[in-house]
Length: 383
Length: 63
Image 1 (tube, rainbow over the protein chains, first blue to last red):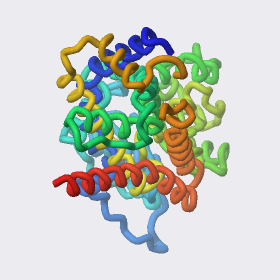
Image 2: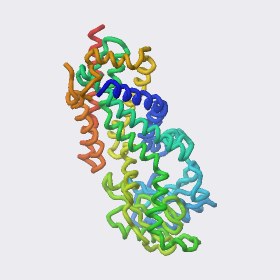
Image 3: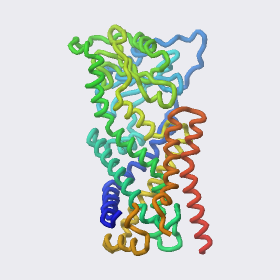
Image 4: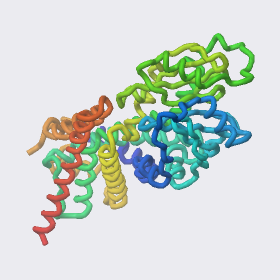
């Protein structure tokens, strides 16, 4: 590699990092509590106490559960029903409209064995919601998602150029050497290099999957106008649904259509995950991977008959697999702790990069690169 | 000694392969797959722990 090309890589590393650093620091800091969001939420809002199942306990009737949930929230409509993969617990999500603003709506947990409903929980506007919004869309909706996605792309460019500029520094050094006895600048340069190169693969995966996650809204929009529209094309000119049919029957239909899968959540007609005429029962598999690869069974919301069930297209599967790889929520608490430690190291890499830039010597980059050469650290050839 | 690309990148490459293996392993299954994931993703962290210990040791020797 010539000194000229190396200089360009240096400039790419410097500018992509400088532009993105503030936002990447924000993402690292807000991401830290989000890694443990399940544990934190359980601690502050414990799951409702489930009664032990007795022989004469009633069996769940989903239509009764829906009626009960709507009675508790008069004037609202059901948007989704979700199922906890860990235990016999479900939740009914209601709001004043099918497509409400993001912070509105109520959640009513229920026992999936007996159908017992628990008091509704108000929307979460607390600390965790603040972290989530700062981490995902900066309270700006789609433009916010796309902006942070662009910051993620800058991170990827910064990582690639970082690996290139790592090469000349390591020509004369053993791997993982930290020259701590000389200047503070040299020590932090070596630390920046070793922390960055050792965590590279993880940061790259979390960065790229994060960028894919910022595209969730357009990806589901595309799926709705593409595969979902195709599956529900016979209903294109059907009159609008006047009354919702039995959810109990719809769920039975979906279970029959995918007997080796479990329901993950049900999207009601008119929400962004279904058509105007269907309950979309999203079925999940039982391994960590297949649990993410949801398969929607579209059930006619008035008759309860199966309309269609297909695998998601590749672009939705990519998004669904990107989610666990970004969140780190697929390997128990130890994996979450590993995620948190790597996140903390990323904060040190970002901080040390900023520190090195602030302490940069007032010598033109060209001259510094020439110095690397004369020291035999070699910017020429090889790389 | 001037190191070639292989000498510079053999350890980083090994760590990257281990990390990717760890990231995918826990996705494939539970139980032993989780353990493999924790172990292989723990290697880069353990190595950084060693770097830290070595730095502390070096600064103690100097003072």
